[in-house]
Length: 186
Image (tube, rainbow, N blue to C red; front, side, top):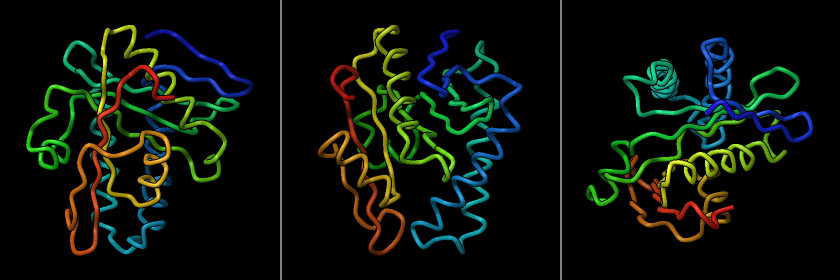
């Protein structure tokens, strides 16, 4: 996991303790932006809970002897602009699939600073994760999203979801779960 990939000014490397403050700032901006983009910017406690959950995962991942969660950061000109993680699938996936994907790991925490979105950073992070998964002999991963904006992107990138759960987050909400092969996803 000590591999660093550089494409132009973009570098991707495993998360380090030195990245935590920048990653925390990235989550505050990106998660707030995602909620606002969904028309949910008024849900301050939900936004804070999501940010705190991601920060807990980051801190747990820094102790690899006790963690099966891995994080990578994307940097441009020394500034953290994106993150991605791989971990055992979470509760939303368990619930939405009736525990059918419990043994499959989850691509998660894919966030890019709002000003850097649309520049291929998320795709580069996913490609880096695929390299890691192939090296580990992992054949598939899952991911989920309740964000409509992200769902549109995942439908284009990964196709038909494995599960679609209506009204999961409340009336008129949709939560989607994808099961994706490691090879041929990018």
